[in-house]
Length: 598
Image (tube, rainbow, N blue to C red; front, top):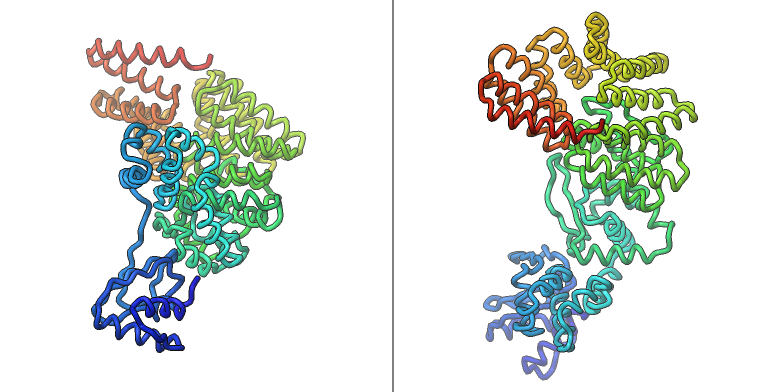
């Protein structure tokens, strides 16, 4: 980069000054006096900082445009204009002006793919255009394919610019940028920089990267965190720079610390959720803790925190799995389960557990394998894949038993009980739930005990043993209230409503599930409440509730729940004398049931 004195000397000679003064101050004063008599537009391109710009500023009457890779905010009166990437039409216009408008118009689809691969950056689009202009025999599809295979190799000017910018960064900033490249395209919370560098209060590095436009501030999330993302091509360049480093060492240390921070924060948020029954923990997974004040502020509303971090957490699990950090992968996946269960994010649940299971198996981590098998079995159960669920629960139970973790074994036994229940085998489910209850009581897991007692009450209710159902549900209710487990209380209320045919229990259960954001259990509460409303002749409310429950079951992919609501709607319309509509619903319910596993 050139010094202000050299630039002033060149400008003065261009203005016809025969003898250039020796000092920067004298040159700057002469430059201002000359432009005071001859107002001009001064363009200062690719400025380094405010110190480089100040001596080159003219006096009144002239205008100045300063372009820079970094935000220069120290110049009084300057208007800061942040230039983003070109819009697709603007990028196509630039590409066409260089490579030929007719050529671009003939292969518009390939041209759009090219400007998308360029990330809308003018330098990249110009580089692509000059490549095409120099090769008139190429179709645009040729360059499109080459960009997909090796975009930096094709856009050499862009690579040189990025390499130059990367080389100018201080060490901590370069390491942070490389870490962000590995973390992928999703926006990350600001504390990731602290974890990557292993120190709290790394705002100076964040601010530097933002100022030089290598990190974008994309906004503030629902829990008040600023979120950052590396711009498209810069992120790909950072990822390639990180990938070129030797495996292990500082690169892996930074990633491991970020994952350890995700684990510690996710576990802290999980512990504050309304229910954490069946949660499993990777005891040996590393943890990097945020300051208590920060941690408390971020997770004050744990559901909001999980909502904000949903995708970033899933990406962290996959990064850990791909980096060979098996315990971090499955520990983080396990910490997400209570939230994923509460809000029925079954796709994310299966995706994260599948990645973590593969990592655990590769590392020979049998406990992690069992934990992920159990979690995947639960997803399969919710998706009516009973054989698959039974296999996962059985295999995880055996591993937990072999490892001597009786409490974890009981969680898998409960899963087997649920499979039997959904298969219409209440006697089998009772055996499993009573076995699990004995283990929970012996190991002092009161949350597990509340679950098992509620499950026993439900199974007894199905089999007609109302006295035992009442006793078990009463014990479960007392435990849930003592533990402050509102979700379990809602589940027990739902069964109490069936037991006593009391609308108040169903309504209370619905209110609890809606307050917790549990749409799945809420749909079952709506379904049960509608049954009582229909029995009492309130067909309009019953129909509305069943339609709402059916919509939720369909959104969540619960075929069993959808079949039940459809069946009840058919019966309701038949009792109301609307036989045509009733036949439609009853026929659809039969089709849904035929699609379920036997």
